[in-house]
Image (cartoon, rainbow over all chains, first blue to last red; front, side, top):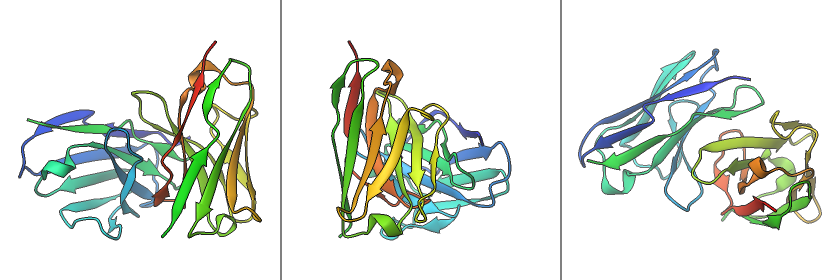
Length: 107
Length: 114
């Protein structure tokens, strides 16, 4: 199985900060990567797919980049509603796998 | 509007069986890749199983041989048959659509405990 290593596991940030979360795959995944946001008690929400394509309705402050094994989620200016847990997921090869998650907390 | 609604969760003893359902509206289960993803209490997301449009099925190693994914096209419903349940199967189970999971249900809680 392809392992997804996400970092950091948590971070504290302020409204307006630029936030970056990284995800590393144990082998190349050809941009077959999605990012999700989850708030407590809710189902995850798709933010980006194919590493950098923004899902419809998702604010443009979210962006994704990367290639090969290394990928990044960036929130350009953190908003109050962005405090949540973020997950990456590879869908290059079944079994699909998720990163461990990054909890973004208020500083 | 696309909607997925899971049901069938509950409290079950170790070694028991349970069948989860995921009723779809606004999308056709048979023409989409449909998955089950679970989340143990306070933990991260774990992909469980997928059924492709052609009927091929795949499972996480942790559930292989114990869980079976299926669909009923006439009812537009996805299922997860879970046998030989263990305490570590305790989780909220979500159904979701596509490779990048763009539509999720609200989840159903399965608790395996004596």
